Structures are given as C-alpha cells and as structure tokens.
Amino acid sequence: MTMMNGQLNGERRAQPRICIVDDDEAVGQALRLLVRSFGWQAESFPSALAFLAALQAPPDCLLLDLNMPEMNGAELLESLAARGVPIRTIMITAQKESPLLVRAEAAGARAQLTKPFDDEALKTCIESVLAA
View 1: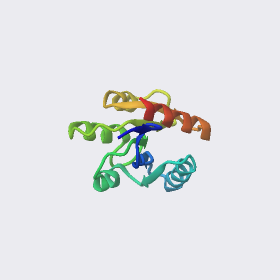
View 2: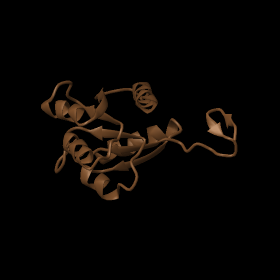
View 3: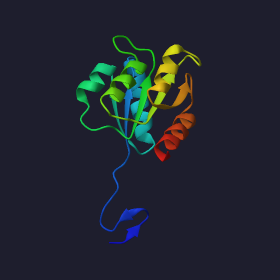
View 4: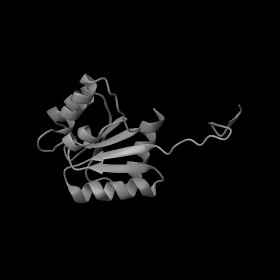
C-alpha cells in the first residue's frame, strides 16, 4: 500500500473528534457549533459525570470547563488518569491562576484558554494540541 497525503490508498482518515464538557448549556452548544465549523466532529456534554457515563472511546481532544458543580474539570482529569485513559485536554477557565488549574495540569491538561477567547485562539489551540 502506498501513502498519499498521510493516508493509505483507499482509506480516509477520520476527522478528529472533539468533546466539550461545560455546565453552561449555551456555551457547550456554541463551542460544539464552532468546532464543527472548523471541520472537526464535536459532541458536548453538560457535566463531567455525563461525559464519563457516555465515554466509550477517548476523543482526540477534550475542551473542559474547569469550574463545574458535582465534578470539576480537575477531578474529571484525575479520574481519567486513574483509569489509564489519557485524553489531550484544553482547560477553559475564567481564572488564570487557580489551585484547580494546577491540579488539572498535573493530571494531564495540555493547554489552557482563558475566557473570553476568540474563535481563532480556540482553533489554534486545538490544532496545537492535536499536533502534539
């Protein structure tokens, strides 16, 4: 088999799958639509617990709100790490510095976007994390 554009002849590479976890439903929906407009698959979840309940295969990238009720973003990453499920994660937060952010980074978060951020910053951040 020969390679063409990084793909095997006759095989198509699936679009990256991006999951969004944010307890603000409007934010989750907006991010899902934005990520899809970039050409990637996107799913959104209203909580960390909903994401865990639906998780069958790890996404290529996770956009994760840091501050959520029931289970925050750091706790979700710690839970995934304990299960041996590493996921390239971008933390979304309004706080530039937080003990939760330090925990999330220790549990494997690869990048951080501070609210508010623009569309291009999100796209660039996702591309960077996917390429790593």
